[in-house]
Image (tube, rainbow, N blue to C red; front, side, top):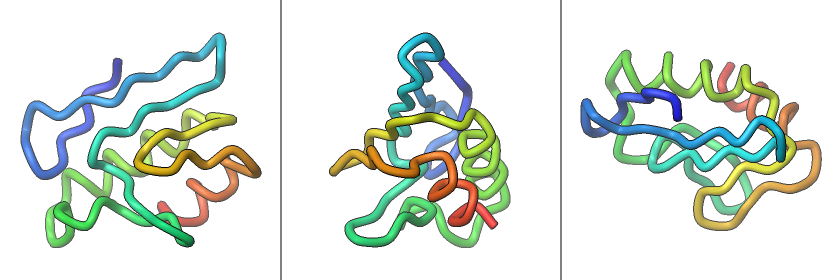
Amino acid sequence: MAHSPGRTPGSIAVHLPRDVVLCTGDAVAGVGRVMQGVFNTGHTHPRSSFRRLAALSPAVACFGAPVTVGTAAVLRAAAG
């Protein structure tokens, strides 16, 4: 688990390194385009959480519809 404060201070993400899977909670959102969670804009903690999650280089990211192709690059690009 990774502490990933976003909309709420106690938010977490679940990282399964052996399976290269990341469940992001509401830190990440997107349908057709990956972005910072829509309820997390305008705050500094969510942006740094997003960057830390992107740095984990997952093969699959789960948030709504999972990202399963080029996941690490998609998250890094969206994290800025």
